[in-house]
Length: 87
Image 1 (cartoon, rainbow, N blue to C red):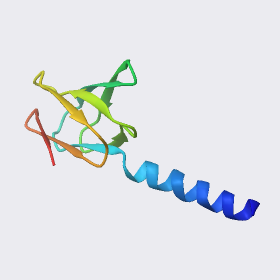
Image 2 (cartoon, rainbow, N blue to C red; image 1 turned 90 degrees about the vertical axis):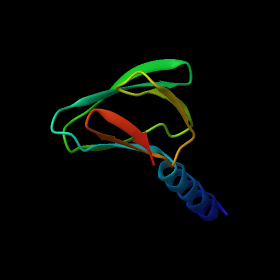
Image 3 (cartoon, rainbow, N blue to C red; image 1 turned 180 degrees about the horizontal axis):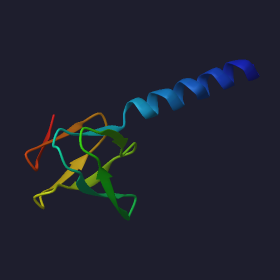
Image 4 (cartoon, one colour; image 1 turned 135 degrees about the vertical axis):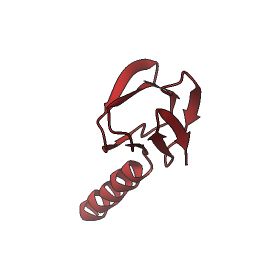
């Protein structure tokens, strides 16, 4: 019984991380997104060519141009030419 519970919790944790949003910076310079999650606001710096996972349980993201988007997880924010697009 305990073994089944441990396996179920591990699967749940793995599926939760799979639902996180990601951001890909295709530019040659770092870019910053402002992420508001659970009432907390933080800057997410993404290096040139870097991909990061964030926003595991839904959030608002302020894009480099000032646009604000709501994410629920599973989306990819692609930054190219200083412009962010959600895929």
